[in-house]
Image (cartoon, rainbow, N blue to C red; front, side):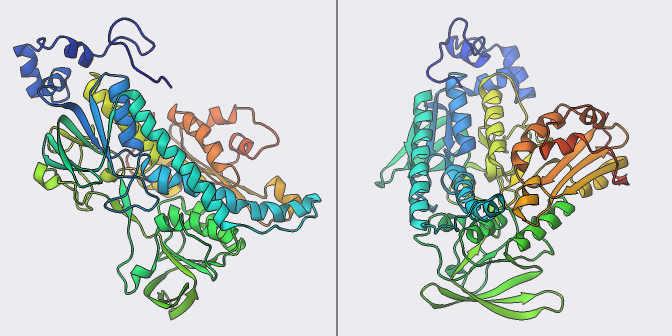
Length: 536
């Protein structure tokens, strides 16, 4: 990573100055012909240059999360744009007045969650060690020490993000920003004072926020924000409502740290949208690790019985009827929504989609030419690395003279349940729905080597989805130890168009679980695609 200022003249590691920089140095270069071209193509370099006039900033970004920070920093550091980034004051639990540089991922999402996943995994490691001759009993755990260490690291990362922006030359402004019009942003500082910024372009990168089910007593439930900052581990059991990434991961966290854990969800298995065979394997693993699954069940009411004691009434599908469970903590992981309230989008004329997300085109531009949006607030693929990609593409489009569309094909993802699930490309169900012609499925299911001595009854699942017509590998999925680390490398292969023949010709690393991906020779089943998508 290259940090610091970049010379506008002469050769550099970043290559020649962008066309935006050259125009900034020679402001009278736009010709009548270029102006005409700008009207025809809003993404032409002349159209972009025409926008860079008579404003305090080239870009004002609302939100210093992953996407907003990347777009702001790259626009300044790589392309010489004048940028301001507006973010709410730091805090561990978000609110209309609390945010912080780093955003959801760094402060109350991916990073602190992964730290707690690490902490919770030690319990099973201690248990597995007995089979390998270790005689020590399982030690106790200090929740407060864990949270203090987690908080210290998050505070450090928050400072890192602030310094990244300032070091790149971005004006970092703390406060709440809202649009007053297509080129005007009002910032309310923590002390209540206000200032107005004018910008040739405004980027909205405010992310999303946790939601709760609308049921009586919902105020007694926490979300992932609060769950990552609890003063103490609940004395009783924990009920998590939901079945997505967050719900499944927190079920593993609380269970691993010693709390009796219930997972309640509406569907028949957790992790809707993932490969069905993988979903079933995750559910089996959760149950074997002691998590109590309440499938096809919805909470109907939460009652507070006393300090740290709640009764949750529920309705179960099928013949399950109604019932209740008493727990020490209720956590709702029932989805997130784009964070658009109070941003003044209406004043600027920015359109929202039916789900409340900001509607954008393929280049992340809204219906208002000077207003752009990236990340979870657009509800495309809500992953941190995707927001980073969108931020880089936006900087290129606005200031690099290189209109760039984010590329959403073969984006890998992982769920840090225990053991984790990871995948890239099409699930078996998606492949059948969208591809034309034969779809070949290869499946391997086995007990990990470590389990043969530890005694853990858990299976690893590995799966390849192949387009039968072209031999292209179009989907790879895994449930098992190190799945995320393995899948990142596999994603590169799929991005490069790897075929099953190329997988087969690759020599594996032995002994490893990863080698199974290059040794699956026997097709498990062949299905017929119902779509019209063909790979060459």
